[in-house]
Length: 121
Image 1 (cartoon, one colour):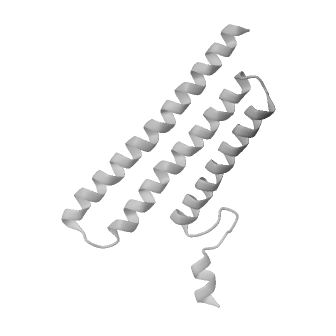
Image 2: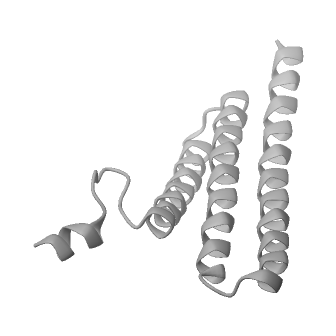
Image 3: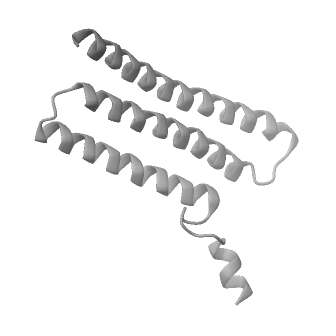
């Protein structure tokens, strides 16, 4: 049983590393695209950079939440550990929703864009 826990810990650590790599590479790609586009185009580059950075962070956060859940399975299920996981998941979920609103301009449960509803009324 200890070997299984060890492998699960490795998987959790690997997922954490993958989450950090996703965020890092996504940020580098977004910044490099921004800098190269700066030479050619001048319109809407800042919003494009924010959108691409937000997507990279959002994907990385999802992987990090999965790593936290897997890591919690291995540890002793104490009330303190469960509470810590709950707080981490809440914070990351709040960040994910905030980023998604920033990227798409709407909440995940909305079907239409907020701006299109107000302009069509």
